[in-house]
Length: 70
Image 1 (cartoon, rainbow, N blue to C red):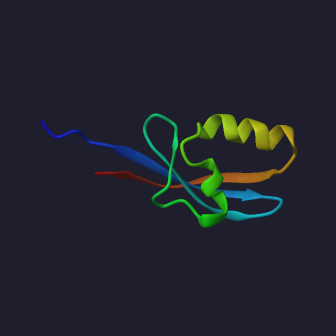
Image 2 (cartoon, rainbow, N blue to C red):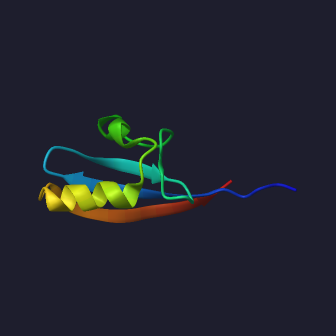
Image 3 (cartoon, rainbow, N blue to C red):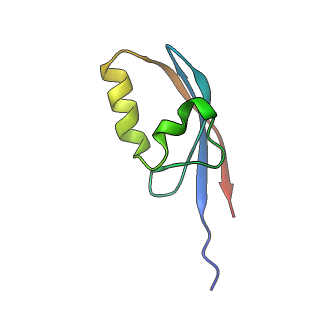
């Protein structure tokens, strides 16, 4: 049986950078499809990262770009 993996791509805008971040179905950031400036997020929970960025007042906006299944 083939397992379908679902990923979401978000556009993240912070004080220093803006770029795409790819998140898997478990909520962890994937290396593939993530902007080089956000490679430090790879393997971490996206929700937790957003909470930290909001706490530091570094996060301007987050917008979902697309959903992919493969």
